[in-house]
Length: 113
Length: 116
Image 1 (spheres, rainbow over the protein chains, first blue to last red):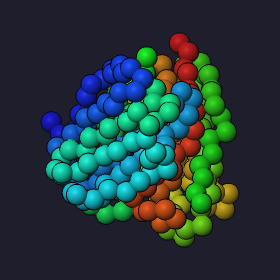
Image 2 (image 1 turned 45 degrees about the vertical axis):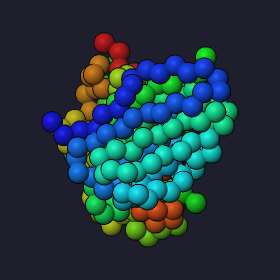
Image 3 (image 1 turned 30 degrees about the horizontal axis):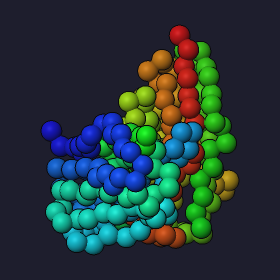
């Protein structure tokens, strides 16, 4: 089945550690996105990529990094520079063209201990 | 700058009641798209509808209907004869060239609870 997978579903991290969240899609989509969701709030864009080996900062990129070495994969690293990383992280992808709906993965809930 | 406002933070209804979720948007773009997503307790966002700025026809899909009014910059979502399975957070979103055509600006969401 086509879709987006994110792993792990739950992630715990100690302060000061970097952690990488996985996002894989088999929809053959060009564009991929990372969002952060805090309780009672909407989604905020962290990074997005429209094509392999290219990505742009979103609204809240500080303390995060990404790579796009393959079309199918768009991992997100939460670095120790991110001051408040505990949140729900959602990955999405969209097809060619600027107006297509984004399809979302199941999310990763990150908790910093 | 683009902005999406969902003023209703939480709504509770009894099963079989109709409910309308409000969405008001701001944009300087003449071409834009509006979206609604559903987020059940599992967390994954489910796409419901996309509507472009040139198509103001209302749309109905089963128990769901959408009312797009450019004059009031609103894109409201109505669930008819609500069911317990409709309980979720619903997000309205806007895509336009103000930032990038590929970026979505989300509202803060409306938590809908349908009681049996």
